[in-house]
Length: 145
Image (cartoon, rainbow, N blue to C red; front, top):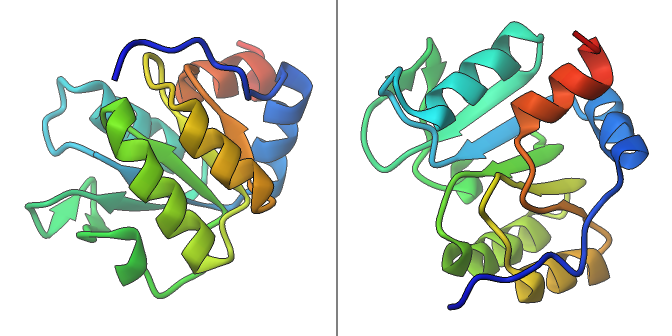
């Protein structure tokens, strides 16, 4: 897949609203490595008071949270899904979000754009953010530090 420009995306006002309405967040690609951005963002979201579900193929716990292998394994409601995976992984992730029926926001981190997946999610009533860092945007829009 070639690099894409996001044709479906949210504006800052919408992003602020997502952070206000979402209480539970699954982080797909959360890493146990403190040097990785996915670890830093996961830690930040936990510290901001969100209930976070790390999704990672290994490990049992990351940052004191139970680790799940997939979105389908989470037996609680998931409001937002934050993605730290390659753009080509976004279509099956969007499908998993749609199948769950409770995901309100699909958030793809910086460098992650998949307009086909975004269109699928949007058509299913899921708001989409592409190519933005959840931590950076939260600091800017909610904490305004």
